Every structure is written in structure tokens, then in C-alpha cells.
Length: 79
Image (cartoon, helix red, strand yellow):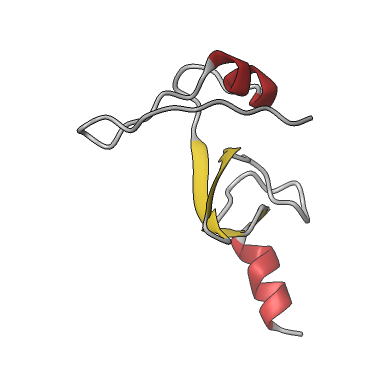
């Protein structure tokens, strides 16, 4: 699914995420989002509350669009 809209950044650096985009991401009031720059693009994703490898809910690290807990990061470092 591709959605697109134009928005302007206000003088405080804020931008409104249009309702159609919020609906597509299932983002509601007070939800946390993640932002990163990738290939000169701003990528906004809904905050993921669980590790992508195990069911741990305390995410420590984000690598691109993947979220990892400390235990999984330590395991990966051991390889």
C-alpha cells in the first residue's frame, strides 16, 4: 500500500501526519513513532513494542526497521 501527502514544517519544526497516513500505520493519539533517515528520505514507523527475534517487550536497539532487546543483541554479538 502506498500513501502520500504533502505537509509543511512549521516554525517549531513540527509536521502534521495526515489522518490517512495515521490510519494506514494504525497510529493513534499519544502513540510513539520512530524516525530515521535512509537514502535521503525520512522514514516514519510506528514504535514497535516487542523484539523482532523473541517476545521480550523492552526494546533496546533499532537497526533500520528491526527492533531488538538487550538479550538478543548480546547473543548476536557473541557470534
